[in-house]
Amino acid sequence: MSAGGDGLDSLLATPHDGAYGEMTPPIYQSSLFGFSSYAEFEDRMAGRSDRPLYSRVQNPTVSAFEQMIARLEGAEAAVGFASGMAAVASTLFALVKPGDRIACITHVYPDSYRLMERMLRPWGVEITYHTPEAFEAEPELLAGARLAYLESPNSMMMEVMDLRAVAGHARRHGVTTVIDSSWATPALLNPVALGIDLVIHSASKYISGHSDTVAGVVAGRADLVARLRDLTLPLLGAKLAPFEAWLLLRGLRTLEARMRQHGRTADLFVDRLAARPEVTRVRSPGANAVPGLRGRSGLMSVEFAENVDIPRFADALKIFRLGVSWGGFESLVVPAAITLRQAGEQNAPQRFGVPPRLVRLSLGLEGAEDLWEDFMQALEVATG
Ligand SMILES: *Cc1c(COP(=O)(O)O)cnc(C)c1O
Image (cartoon, rainbow, N blue to C red; front, side, top):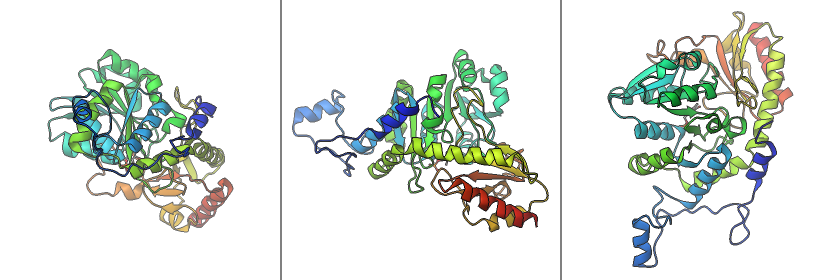
């Protein structure tokens, strides 16, 4: 499936191999790490050693997760955070200042949109929103921007962009590029190889894979990750906890295998949905839809025809559950009509143009035929 392919599988399957031959790393559940001498303590404080000091900034279990993500992304460095939003917020606050402009993708993740509008804009940061086509074809929109904030695909609409082209435009304009790549994971896309500076993941989704963890991570250029480590990691303090890091390392062991399964189920849905008159459009980018994309994840959007009663469809589902988030073992649906009704945001740039008959599906790890059968029986109820 992936360019990383067996290499990625083998990397993820490598045991920890600690002092006792343990296959998995210990959870270092300690807030601080002591020193045995004045000289050792002084060396650490002077930056002459990198021994762990205090778990707000450094913890061996968290470091093991960060190093694994950096290797999977082909990035120079990585830093973990308490949530995907902590990763997004820490990155933006570390890299922009009042007077700067962020060129942001349309239909950005809704809480990233609210961070920009409710915190960054009142703080004096300008934000402009641009479609994937504009990022590709109108490089001048980057002139004078500090940062390009990207998603490919973006939220709900699943629109993709040629990241190599956009990274090239950004480099010529001296603009730092950041992508939220939670949809793809390192199993399907490596934005750093395409020239992107920083890659953010909500690790709560596929990287965890088990709907039991909220976490985030940023990987990319060493100088930029060092800036996050110096500034927002210690000063905003939204650090990743050792137990969560341990759960994420466990999730990563099966990432490639899970993504293959999600992808196979998604391929089956895309093939069969094409023949269904009740579905007017399927939004699900697959392998080579844009350069560097190696496959389909299990998160897609479909648009239903007028004769489908969407609330009845949702209520008739037996395996699919209704719920936010995605990327776990369980299949979920989110009708856009519900999120579109969220207070006061009907005309907000990240909502505008979302078809009200759109439903997002997160295809989980259940049997593909069982999921298809469930989808079809609910559709029958909803059109009856
Ligand atoms: C869930 C999500 C986030 C936020 O991540 P949390 O871990 O929930 O804070 C950011 N971006 C995308 C695309 C997401 O789906």
